[in-house]
Structure formats: C-alpha cells, structure tokens
Length: 392
Image (tube, rainbow, N blue to C red):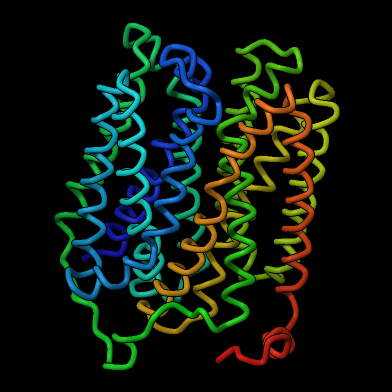
C-alpha cells in the first residue's frame, strides 16, 4: 500500500475522533433547555465519551492482537458512524447520552492503535506524521465547533440533524480503512502477555500531563461559550471566539510535533502550559478585554500541548505494540481523570452562580500542567530514582 494512502487513512481517522464531542458545544445550552436537563447532567454528553476513552483504552492492544490493527480501526470507524446516526433520535435524552458512550468506546480503542500505526509505517518520519495526525484531530475538532451551528440552521434548525451530519466523514473513514490490508500484530510470548507500563514513573507523569490538558480542553469545549456569554458578549460572538480558538489549534497541532524533532520537546510543553495558564486567567478575570487575542492563545497552548503529548509515547517505547500500550495507559489515565472536569465545571457553576470560580480552578490546573512538563524534562534516570520501582 502506498504511503500516501496510509497517511490519508490516518488523517481521515484522526478527523473523526473529535467532531462527535465538539459539535455539542455551540448547541449545549439550547439542548439543555429543550430537554430540561441541568448543566451537570447535559455535560455527561462530553464527560461520558471521555470516561469511555479512559476506561477502554487498555482493550485496544488486545483487540489488535486478535483482529489486526487495521481491521480494528475500521470497526471503530463503523461504531463512530452508528453513534452519530443515533443522534437523529437525540430528542430522547437516553439515546443522546447512549450515543456518547458508543462514541467514547470507539475513540478509546482507535486512539492507541493509530499511534501504533504511525510507529509501524512511519518510523523514520514520526514527527512529521504525528503533525498530520494531530492536525487531523484539530480539523475535526474545529469543524465540529465551527460548522455545526450553520449546518443546523441549513437543516431546518434541527439540532439532531446538525449533530448527526458528522456521521458522513465517519462513514468515509470506515470505507477507506476497510480496504486497507490487515496485518496481524506479531509479538513474542513476553510482549504478547505484557500489560500497560504501570510501574514506570515516566508513564505516570506523561499520563498526568495528558489528563490535565485533556480536562482543560473538554471543559472549555463544553463551557467556554457559556462563560463568554455570561460575561456580556453576544451568543454569536461567544461562538465565534470558541471557533477561533479551535481554528488556532490547526497550525499549532501541525507545527509543534515537527518542532519537537528540532528543539527540546519538554521546553515546548512548558511554553504551551504557560500560554494556556495566561489565557485562562484572562478568560477568568477579564473575558471582555481583547477576547480574540486570548481565544487565539488558548487554542495555540492547548492544541500544541495535545500534539506534543501524542509524540511522547513514540519516543519512550520501541515496537508498535509497545507504543500502543504506552499510549493506552496515557489515554486510560488521562481521559479517566479528565472526564470529571466538564462535570465539575458545570456543577461548580450551578453551585456558585457564575463561571468565575470553576475557571479559577482551570487556570490553576494549567499551571500544574506547566510544572509537570518541567519535571518531565529531567533525564529518565533522575525521574526513575524518585520511586525506585520504575523499569527501563
């Protein structure tokens, strides 16, 4: 199979990992009102996929060993298609929330395997290809945020059809991946029986970093439009600011993995963390002061930190299966912890009466993310000495 076809399949799969989640943000207040759901309950539509992405990520390497990597990813594209089509019946809240569970399960399994796919087919070009991979996710995320509202208006102002529209690129992904030759995973007895790298300190640190940046992303994807609107901006401008931040994730997602091959990737991570913290502080305390600037910078900071986090397992592990396991642990721990961030943000808003308190906490989390990036920059031996049980 030609490399360009493999790269196209990778990017198309990546595009389909985000729209099912980010497409809800422009419509979430309307959906909550129409279905008479509290903010903490409607946030389950974002939190449950993230929880599934955490809990089910360890299943991915086992499925790859049994079914083959390419066939498993194709099946994930099929489940994403089904989940998004179910949103045609989203007026029933149980179906809307159930579609979120299906979506999260498919993303959970596809994510680690796509990292293994990169390690298998693009080992000499990992930085560049991860750039395309993260760009694909940024395109999907931005598309869901930017295009869902106008698509809904074109479809007779039906939000169920606006959400279900994203089944079309998922169906295209299914058709392409099903045509790729399926290669069975090969592993010796020890590697086949091996589990996730739970005893390695760096795996835990990477997972915690990923958890914070993912929690920040999904909290903002759910609530930043409401924060801007509460501060006095029109709903149109609030949606535009969110769309701007998502679009800014496109160049940062592509450029940061490429720069990571030429500069210290941990210093780049620290820079992304500081930019994110400053942007969140402004959204918290001065949301109407130069809001376009801070929307651009938060998109750059979080988009860049996500893209760089995807690179880390590729440099820590050797084989495609090992990379899938490092990535599975990162996603398991990361999304498992990040899933509560949108719920707690919505709950804090309900209890405190405004969004300032939850956004202060999000700002503090961005600073903690920066600190973790600094700790990761230490050589592995120094980090491993902290617990003594880490294995090479």
